[in-house]
Every structure is written in C-alpha cells, then in structure tokens.
Amino acid sequence: MITRKQWTTVSEFLIETVIRICGISAIIFVLGIFFFVFREGAGFLFSKWEPIKFFFSTEWYPTSVSNKRYGILAIIAGTASVTVIAMTIAVPFGLGAAIFISEFCTGKLKEILKILIEFLAAIPSVVWGFIGLMVMNPLIIDIFNVPIGLTALNGGIILSLMAIPIIVSIGEDSLKAVPDSYREAAIALGITKWQMVYRVLMPAAKNGLLAAVLLGVGRAVGETMAVLLATGHAVQIPGSPLDSVRTLTATIAAELGEAPVGSDHYQVLFVIGIFLFTITFVINLTAYLIVKGIRVQKGES
Amino acid sequence: MFQETPYIRHKLRVEKSAKTVFLLMTVLIIIPLIMIVTYMVYKASPVLSMDFLLTKPTNGMRQGGIWPALLGTLYLVLMSLCIAAPVGVMAAIYLNEYAKDNWLTRTVNLAVINLAGVPSIVHALFGLGAFVIFAGIGRSILAAALTLAVMTLPVIITSTKESLSAVPMSFREACWNVGATKWQTIRGIVLPNSVSGMLTGFILEVSRAAGETAPIMFTGAVFYKAIAEGDVFAYGLLDQCMALSMHLFTISTQVPNVPEALPYGTAVVLLSTVLAVNAISIGLRVYIRSRKKW
Image 1: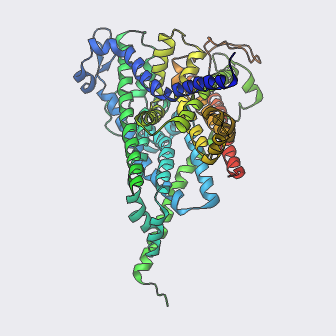
Image 2: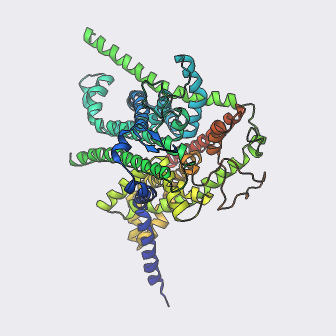
Image 3: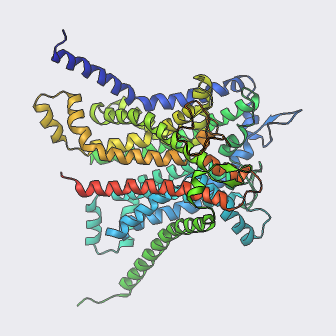
C-alpha cells in the first residue's frame, strides 16, 4: 500500500524532473538547431568547402552544369547593404521615438503610442514583403525614375520599419531603468528636458541603447520573407542603394526548394545557415552581455 | 524677479525644437502603419466577403477564396500552441521557482534570448533537418507545427516567467507554512494567480505563429492543396497544408496574372487576424493590471 505521504513524495519528484527537463529545453533546442543544421551541411563542409573561395568570391553559380561555384561575397554584401540602410533609418527614428515615449509624453498618449508600436511589431514579415513588392516598388520607380523598384533601398526601408519596434521598446526600457534620482537631480539644477536627455539619460542608458541597436541589427540580418520579396533577386555587389541585391536569408529561402536533397547545392545552403546562425548568435550574445553588465553595475552601486 | 536671459531663451528654444523633432520621428513611424493598413483594406475591398473566406481558390488560384489556407493556418497555430505551451510554461516555472542563480540558469536565459534571435529561415533549416528528415515525419502539418513551436517557445517562456514573478513571495511563504510542498504551492497558489498573464503569452504565440512563412515553407506548407469546403477536419496530422502566409507569398510571386485584389485580400485577412489577436492580448493585459489585488 502506498500511503498518501509516499505518493506526494513520488509525484513531487516526478513533477520536478519534468520541470527541470523542460527548464533546460531552450538549451537543448539551441544546441539542436546548431547540430541539425550542421549535420545537413557537414558533407560539404568537410570535403569540398574552400573557405577562401566561399567568403571572398562573388561567383554564385550553384546550378551551373559545367562549373558550379559557391562564392557568397556578393550575397554577404547584399545582406550588409540592406542592414546598413535599415539601420541608418531605424537607429535615429527608433531612439528618437524611444526618447519621446519615455521622456516627453505621459498618461494616455504614452499608452497609445506604445500599443501602436506593438502593432507595428506584430505585422508578419510576409506582409511587409508584400508591401515592399506592391506599394514601395512602384513608388521607388516613380520617385527615382529607375526601371525596377525592388532594390536594396526598398528592402532597407521595409527592414527599418521592422527593426524600429525592437529598438523603441528596448531603448525605452533602458531609459526607464535610469533611476529617477538622476532626473530629479538634473531638474533641480534647472536644466531643460532635452539637456537632461542629452547630458544625463543618454550617457546613463548608453549600454541599453547599444543593446537595442544590436538587437535591431540582429533582426535585420535574420529577416527572410520581407527581403525575399522586396530586394529583387540579383546576386551582385550593389553599387548604389538603387541596385537589386540578394541576402543570405533570401538565398536559402529561394533556392532550398529547388536544390535536390543531399546535393552540394543543398548542403551549401545549410552552410550558409550555419554562418547566419553564428552571426546572430554573436550579436545576441553581445547584446545579452551588455545588458547583463548593466545589471551587475546596478547591483554593486 | 525672474528675468529671461538670452541663454535661457536659447535653452527653451532648443528644448522646444528637440521635443518637436522627437514627436515628428514618432509620428513618422506611426503614420506608415496607419497608411498601409488603410491602403491595403481599400485595395482588398472588392474581394472581402464571407465567401472569400469560405471557398477554395479556383482557376489556378486566380479566383475564389482562401478557405484551405485559413484552415491550414488554424491547424498549424493550434498545434504549435499545444506543443509549445506545456514546455514553455514548465520552463518558465523552472526558471522562476526552481532555478538558483548559477551558471546553468544563466545559460538557460542566454539560450532563451538566442532562440528568440535565431533567424526564421534557420529555424526552417532546423525543422527540415530534424523533424522532416531525421525524425522521418516528412513534410507535414506535424513537422511544421513542431518547427513553429520551437520558434515561438521564447515568447511563452518570457511572458509566463513575467507573470509568475508578479505573484508576491508572501503568497508562497504562506502556503509553505501550512505544510504544502513546492509543487503543491505552485499548482495551488502560483499558477492560478498568474493564469491570465500566461494567457497573454499564449495569445502572442498565436499571433507570431500565424504570421510566419519561412519556417513552414520547407516543413509542411504547400502552394496548393484541394480540400473540402466547410469541413473543419479536412486536414490530417501528416498531411501537407496550405497556410495564409504561404498563400500570400505564392499568389503575389509565383502565380502570374493574379487579379490584384486577391493578394491584397489575403494580406488583409492575415494582417487583421494578427492585429486582432494582438489587440486581445493587449486588452487582457490592461484588464489584468486594473484588476490586480496586490
């Protein structure tokens, strides 16, 4: 006979085990992602992969019959160009909006703006891509008088709108985390709001703001559907924002369906996946360490 | 008497212009949102009707509705929620109730942040490599839902953890003092008091999963699949399915000569679903805050 007490002990133990396993599930999945993407790409990575050609050649001809070449420099340049354009727009606007929402408005207006920013963040990436394709494309053709509007600029603008909500919400959080005593001391000295933002809050929150920007970059680098639809499909190093480009993510999305499972082409796409995973991992790790650094400092003071 | 010096006047002018600039920046972010939504609804208006939702695409997807895609998205979303919710909630319980501040906990936190930051296309590669090929499930609703579940896990973990940590420590202490075990305390006191906060997390997961395209592209979503109209059990677990996001991608890029209103209609349905779900979650959050007793 099991007594009630024994039953409680046993079930307590079982439940705790399940909870502990689920607790580390996030670690399992991150390792799993790396493992399985690596596993599919390993065949190519260990036998035919030439890092120098891979990273420094612009020749991406995965389906050529006579001479298949896998150089991703032009594709990296594509990702870099849309990310740079996106950040040029998103950083000032995102931080500006974060400062406005955090410091210059209160009450209802603040709540409404925050909700609208949240809606902006909720728009699915394929809808953003669709907007780039159907709305921005003709606009860019008209304004700049170019033959095609699916360009790095188009993708950059779309990406900036996708990165802005992240920058705003994390930026606002880090401004909110500056102790009120800083603000009170500043106001007691008779300075204006803007002087306070510029001289007190920005230096105090600079790590958090940097993390916000980094996470925005991470979002821009990793975004797939929006750039697939909005940037055109030319594998080339862009000479101007009005050139079509192809990003790392879009290359995988566009070509994986056509590459036969197990072929070199298929495995190269997984190698690009490993590369992307590594980039975003480093970006997220840096942002995490920066934010954690802030917390440690606060704990000491 | 207080006299404005030129310096103070200058200072106030700068203050005013700074405020205006920040206001303009914020407005410039918000305006595209409103303009885009209105424009899309306007463009979609010719096709938006109940029929559009409930009939299947005809004439090579150049006419008809979006029923199979709508149903497919519903299947994917509900199934990914059923997989992600228990694991996510348990993980959050671990992080908030059991974990001590040690290297393991820090690694878990880092992993959660990283999982949220992994590009969606890498999730797609993972889903293809792990579920479709390695586990042998094949391209199916199940494989796609599993991929979506892994991707949206951080959403559930983060929001559940937040709502668990909002339950005051004194509640737990009171419960331990009457002899309850740790799990009894969690089940009897902590979970009931944070259930509405968890619900907002689930709703956010739904909105996230409904909008994603890349992770399901290679794991279970197809361009076209004919299913019976009006039959909500038309898909099986191991069938491939259509999905709203995938359908929008297909008819706006892969199929030539689609009348403009169709993709706009699909986009509006997808967008309004996601925004409505988000609105519910925000409403719920406001309600919880107003009802908070402690």
